View 1: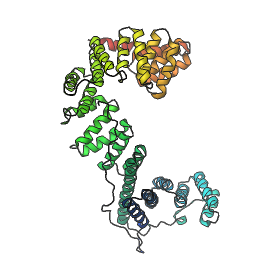
View 2: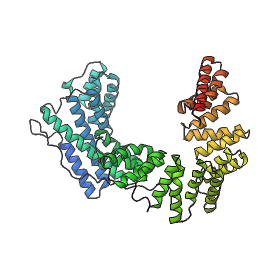
View 3: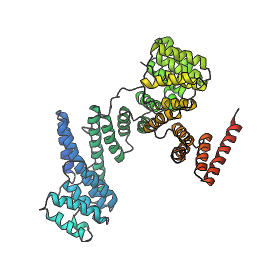
Amino acid sequence: MFERSRRPHAVVAALLLSGALPSRAFSENGVDPAAALDRAVAAAEKGLREGELEEAESEYRAALLEGWLLMGALETAAGRLPEARDAFRAASTSAVETGRPLRALALADLRLGQTAPAVAVLTQLARKDPHDAQVRRLLARAQAGEPSGPADNPSPLAALAPAAKLDLEHRVKAELVRVYMNLGVMHTQGQRFSRGAELFERAAAIDPGSPQVQYALGVARFNARHFAEATGPLARALAAHPEDAGLRRMLAMAWLNSEAFDKAAELLRDDPEREADASLQFAYGLALVRSDRAREAQPVFARLLARHGDSAEVRVVLGQANAQQGDFEAAIRELTQALRLDPRVAEANATLGVIYLKQGRLAEAEEALRRELTTRPDDVKSQNALATVLDLLGRPEEAVPLLRDALESKPDFADARYLLGKILLAQGKASAALEHLEAAVRLAPEDANIHYQLARAYQTLGRTDEAQQEFEVFRQLKEKRRKSAP
């Protein structure tokens, strides 16, 4: 009942099937440069209305091709060749058709003086169609090192006035955002959240100021369980719509799941639905405990238990709150009760193991942590805690594989880096230890113990000056800690 939010949230951004676009820009002969783009978008949206999703996606891909080709032409006309090259590259990966965008890409490379990639692309095109005279002519010139200029590919936008070009650019960008949004919504509705997020990211790159784009991107990342990455776009969407309570809750859960507990607590504190919603109440209490505010969390959980009955999950967090305040006996009682209610409840044995470790009850700590890893074998914190216990028990050889497994899952785990480096150093493997201790110092520069072990590693390897520097940092940090102690 109280598990952190794992259910997908619906993307409420509607399919963009209508909406006014900027004014149309026509060339001197009355031809609309964006006509092919408009046709592809219209065909895609017709497919959506008729339920032909595969056809709609294919037409949207064609729209991306036409849109990025136009953007490339606009950038070229403005003399922004690197940006033009990026647009033609995007066009070349947007649809099945590659001839036009690859030719434009090769021309952009030639104008930028990048002959080698241009030759590679033109060679590819010449093999695909040996009868294409323009490609063969361009390839010969590129191989001879001759420069390329506008005459090789006259711009279809040359006759447009500056204001018309600007209107066209706004129109094309709006269409590209619309296409990426629609494709993203199609994928998220099919529960393909990671792919949806990628498409929303493309829309956000074109129009980062759109709250709708930011919201869709945040929700897709949240549902893909990329919680830390979801917080940025969700926060930007909430800034635009601070009255949206559902959006505020989703951001709070993203902060909670990415371990930014203080931010989650701040968002949930004044939620009007919290007292009536057991899951929100639990999330708020958990955020308080994990942000070192255990005293504030206890009445939250007391009300939760009184209103909704006993719960293993609540007992675990109450145990953690008691442990945080140094009341280990009360913590053990709560955690033991949690295990009676549910022997597989997450974090109960892990918390018991850490408490027993702090009390020096190493055999009991090992037993509890092994039980936790039986149900949650990938829990890196329990792997590290068990490795610490095994090292203290004089069995470091058993600790090493646990630490390597933890670091494979979480390479930036400073505690595991430190302990593995310390064990390897004690085993006479100073060079291997050095890699982990240097990484640990980068990750936790204020940890005096890491600096001490790093100094010893440098000393063992004969790097005396570096060793002395690290010993000095160790002494400074110890003195700083001594002065700040109550």
